[in-house]
Image (cartoon, rainbow, N blue to C red; front, side, top):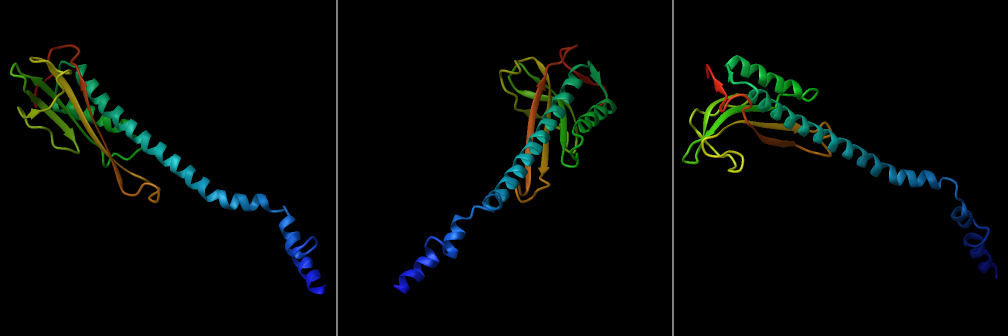
Length: 189
């Protein structure tokens, strides 16, 4: 009988383990300790995703603005193109512009259906050669028409390397029709 009493005393109604099992103090702390690392990682992941998304949106806005500014003129110069490309880099702030490349080109599709570069300027990337062939979607540019094409790339490096290791590359290509003339010219390109 004493053996039965001993087991009841340890595991049963009034034993140490039974009291420990019934004790609810600290349950919240234990639950928090289990969930907190996941929630913190989730928070940093969402924050990092938002930062990358914002960088991509700035890059697209930058390239679209460059194409739009050039399309609003009738003739540009190399200096004006350099200023417009600098505006594109300014739009990227507060993100670093060290990995941003911007290129703007005037492209005309000939009557033979081949799109060729009239002039090109770029920052962080080599401008396209005059009369080089480029691919432009057929529904954007008909034969005999001209368009301003802006291209951009951006290498986004995450400040939280554990969540997004390496560089994430964003790129975009934008087309804008000349507003004042049939083809935007460049006087000294």
